[in-house]
Every structure is written in C-alpha cells, then in structure tokens.
Image (cartoon, rainbow, N blue to C red; front, side, top):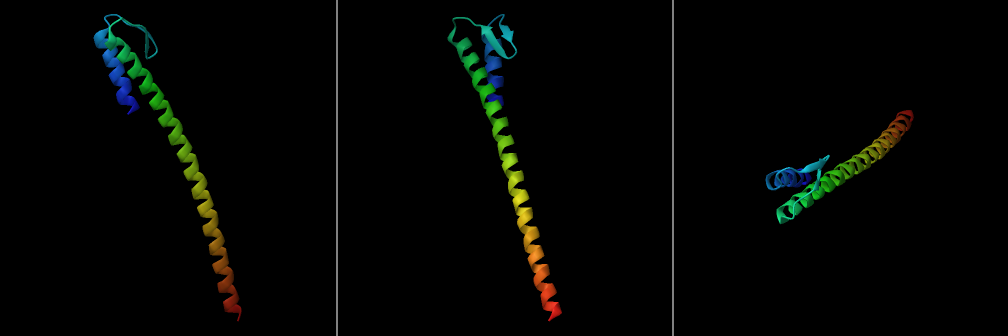
Length: 92
C-alpha cells in the first residue's frame, strides 16, 4: 500500500509540476495547483507506510523467532521427560 501511494505521489508530482525541485523523494517547491499538494501528500503517506511496514515486519519476525525458541525448549523438555519415563520402565 505504501509503495502504491509513493509511486502515485511521485507520478502525480511529475505530471502536474513542470520542473519540480526534489529532496530525495520529496518535492520541496510546489505550485499553487491543488494536484501538486496531493502529490506531495501521497508521497509522504507512502514513505510513512513503507517505514511502518518495515518496522512492523521486523517486530513480528523477532516475536516469531522468540516463540519458536520457546517452542523448541518445550519440545526438548518433553522429549527428556519421555526418555526418563521409558528408562525407568525398562529398569522395572
């Protein structure tokens, strides 16, 4: 969604403003035409959504790795319990 807004905002700015001055992806000199403001707002919203998407995906990847390590620990504990029970039953 962020990439669609970003590309849409850049295209909107390129089409409506004849010679925009750019600072990275942000046009800092816009016309009084309302479409140029729309292009700037779409670009800013697109960048914000992209950054938030990256941050959220990193956060959930870290949570998933934490959960998988806990699951692995629980699995090894259960395996050790089963081995202990089976070794006690063999001794009897």
